[in-house]
Length: 277
Image (tube, rainbow, N blue to C red):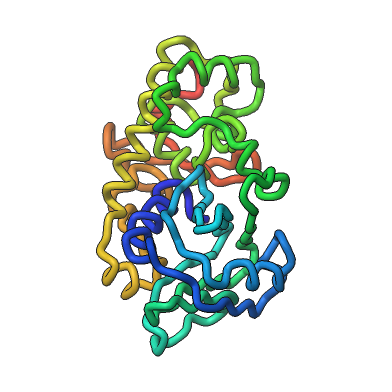
């Protein structure tokens, strides 16, 4: 699933290319990916609208439009958004096509069909997407150790599970929770309530630091993004622990171990991230 750095990469690649461009028509091949309103209303209301900008909130991509509407997208597991020439070969499982007035097409493909779109009118309360329930952005100036400790300090759940709670911190998933906890030297299975003051400080510092690092690594040109079909991000060679079970720790050389926390795979260093506080 794309997490915050991947969604930010999509935003940065597509925003300069579609801002100020109007939608000529919309083709929906899988109506179920339009969560609100109906697919027919979605197509009708978007036709003739202009993209004003792109925004990211957590793992959501938001497109404010002329006329006051805003379109929201969540990629879920396998969603992909590509801007292509009209005659460019379509990806398999392309379910939604925005035909733009400049002759380009903005296409959404999704192998597992979990991705969802919402279209909200000007002043319409968002009761559908889940965006209003998101927690603080990791780059918010108010994101401090006191905030994390206040939200998580009494929880018995593993700190890794808590980091992936989108109602607390927006945008962190399975991959980056491993990287963040390794950088903060905290065992992912520790109950959140067992963390001490300095550990909250390290964790709070590691979250924006690690996410910023991977946002920078994911930077690519529009040509590179299209060539890789929006599916090849550049963070893999720079991962410290995620997906590296059995390999040496990049800090101490100890063998990295894998465990399962809250049903999700997690890799950690038993030396740098000791289970006991």
